[in-house]
Amino acid sequence: MNPTLLDALWNEHRSIAVVLHAMEYLVREQRDHGTRINPAVFRAILYYLDVFPERMHHPKEEDYLFAAVRRKTSEADAVLDELRKEHDSGAHSIRDLEQDLLRYEEGGAKEFERFAAAVEQFVAGYRQHMRKEEDGVMPIARRVLNAQDWADINRAWAENRDPLTGVETEKEYEQVLDRIVKLAPPPIGIAR
Image 1 (spheres, rainbow, N blue to C red):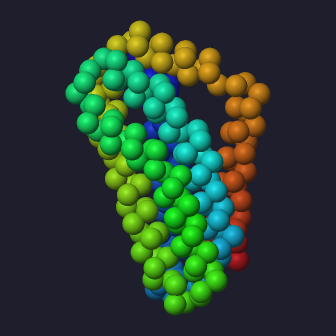
Image 2 (tube, rainbow, N blue to C red):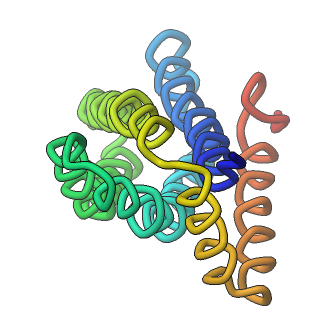
């Protein structure tokens, strides 16, 4: 069994977790040390979360892994239904956080606590979402999907990746992450 898609999804969760940590770190630095958040860094983070998980990662989960699990068992239906709702509301959550960032940018210190609370809620919710996938769906997938199922999933996934836009898309995500690293202060990034 070679669950290539499952490995890819797991690795993508690690990348998302790093970005979530960066969000928390920036808020904590402002709260604890008065280090004002660079809005350009935060906008780059929100852009990454919008284009990568929302447009690439979640569709892979839904179309390949979750669909295969649903075909094999109903045991994960409740958690899969919750995850679909969360995926469907993801873009809206990012827009709400963008609005909170704008209020903070324009309103200054008086808007910081509202913004910080929104970031903390967003990050906690996102982490909980990934835990549901990792603890509630992936173990079931490993258990109920056989070698042929995995081969079919991986083949369908590979066949539905546009070889031209796929390369550009991956480069785009790498460029956004690189931009975050260049804009963010240490220890997240290298900006001074």
